[in-house]
Image 1: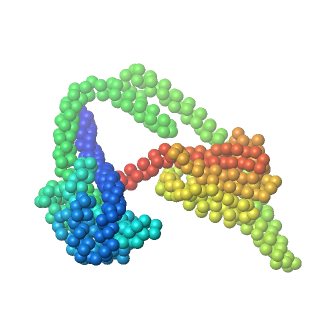
Image 2: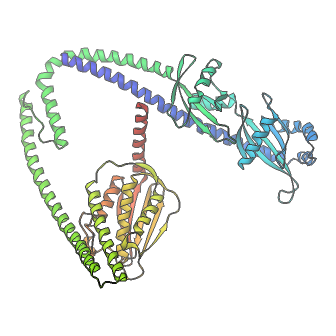
Image 3: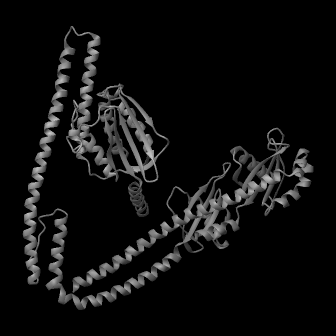
Length: 585
């Protein structure tokens, strides 16, 4: 009873702790989702408004009256007559500049902007080379659209200057983004608040914390007017040297109130469950539950390969009989398992020893003989160079053999996943293969349409591609024509395919059924027979496979197929692990 009480209390406390950690993690995940949603919402609103700005600016630029006004190139005349055009545009900002960027006139809604700040901002936008840009005039944010003015046709008319209109990024826009993201939103210009949905009482505290906000860091926890918030920031693309950020804030206290209610419910349910468990524990524990738990634990241990788990035989008669039968079955399974492991181990060791000893003996004999010839005094410089090259080839072959054995012994280990460019990995591997003695005379061509990113273990995948390329080069050199190897990278919605085509005689019929088994090779002067095995293991560890697509004299095609669903699942697990580690830190 005391044990049951302790376990129940422990489970209750554990549940409260797990719920607390889970809610905290969900708050941070929700904040990140709100940040992403806010950025998406802001981008959508910006795109919609920018398209409207572009159309309105184009319409203004086509007005004959505006062209006639701008053709005067007189600043006072343009200033006097520009107000009607600003009213026609209906925008928050309006400006006219000369062709060289000189500001003729500007108008804006809200606090009056200084001419110096407007001039600097417009010059920064024009220098960006974009038709639209985000700019901060002091601490006021605007999204602007530029439209050139021509007197006459655009192709051969006179270039008069620019008409510039824009809308303000103000509290109204922040409110639209906030409503879509279900969180408070603030726009900062060099750490100063430009627009926000927060109450005025929290702005001073936000200014004090603004310097600590950075999109590269984890979400920050801060106190604003006595209320706890979690905030995350992202930098927006803007012209000039001004740093513009969007900050998403979510009240942590409101989420904590929900957590406190959950804690109370869990505690109440835990106490109720404890009282009910005390009534049943005494009658059930000794006769049924404990022996069955021991038997279940023994079954799980057997499933994990533990044949020595201690199995106590007690409890009811039926349970004791079941335990004895299970123990006899476990003994038979252990004996059979040992026999199978010993048989498979001896067979693998035999194949490996035979293949490795043959290849090593062959290479060592060649190295020894060439070294003796090199030591002869009558050997000329040209002959010594040829002998030295053969020694290098022998050492390279032995190195490849040993590396293959090492990688074969490491299969099954955890992948070191990163989101890397597969096209760059292939290019680097091809450069390494070209240095191999057996590949120097082979023409290797590539067909890589563009960058392809995926969650992969670059080191292992590069070795798999290297093995297939080396096999292709060796096969191509035994073909009838010029030895050629072609590498092709293809990406579609479901998978990434790396195909390697060679001009060799094809795969022998005698090994096609056992092609991917270790220590299987045919028609090769060297090689332990692990290249295809390792490539298949690496592809399977990435959730993919290696296929022999085609094999006829003059054309053999092997493909590494990487399925995006599996790779994205690996990437999601990796990202979640990084998030949890970052949160714990």
